[in-house]
Image (tube, rainbow, N blue to C red; front, side, top):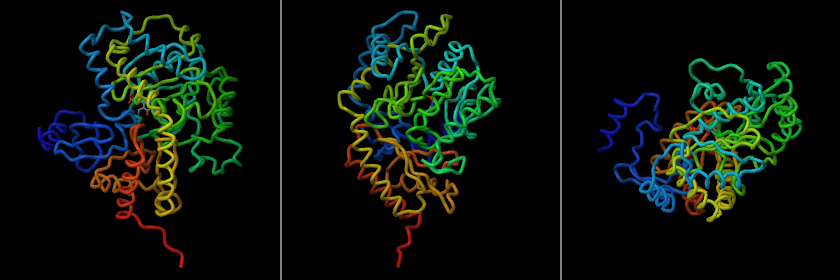
Length: 432
Ligand code: PMP
């Protein structure tokens, strides 16, 4: 099918909420490593990896071969029958996740993983209320939209029992303070939030180690260590959403939360775990998982093909030391981005960890500048480079290539970014 026909049918047969990037959407036909090709054969350097999902490169041979092999052997059984793949992946996850996380429940998306996590936290604690964070994104079900604190992604009637604490967003500190003199007010304020807006007994605190859709908001290193004792004091468990930050993305460690030196009681994963195969996981401490013995089923959850995709993806990440690569190459990327910030005053903030880096675009007095981001998207498309968007105002560029990206590709990316920026924003005035 030709590009125009696909675009026409997309308008005709899909919900209009299935929004595409770019004035004229890019119709992708195939992928290979860190590149994708459109239907007309043009090659693009992919620095968004299908929203932080293509961890080990498009159509990674090891992953694709395992998927194909499994699809020919056994594609589906439902969870009514145990398989080798489901137990192997569950054991693997128990081994690689931090702390006492032990038992898994498999679904098909991050949304479902978060639904399951909230449900099990409420079952275990016998409490109902959840503390979530502003600027967070949790998914698209009614509960997940209610947990999400980003108006563009919240629709319909929100569910009760969810209180949103301020985000540890230092660039735009909600208290107008400056780290480290702030004494982590964003964290300590949670105690007052609990005492004033809940019954005083909570089920969980839910947070992303780095807020993804929010624009890679990276908390100060003491943030989680300060919050968790408060949460425990009021009966809550810590539910860590690793949907974007998991599987080596943040560099050096397998999971983002490991940088913050605290242990989750429940963790959710999706996106990068299976290189694009639809998989959501909720892993919990044994006592938490065992607190619910009623029946619940996900027909496709834990199917042998997605389990094989996840096992192969994790193997590649471990064998090829991709968390290390994310640290090293991510550091190189970060240096380049910091350099561009010096050159272009429109870049207000550079933040993130490993291969999860963001640029926040601003005008005078830090006014969010989504127009520049829109223009940058079009320019980068002309340069044949794909980037992602985020932030409450759509003024943040998210950069997250596959974890096996090399410095050469990062250099190519930085060159294209510099050329694009030079066309759309002014440079810093030279002091005479
Ligand atoms: N949690 C986080 C942190 C996410 O970024 C997302 C997706 N952007 C989700 C949950 C929901 O995942 P899914 O789209 O697979 O339902």
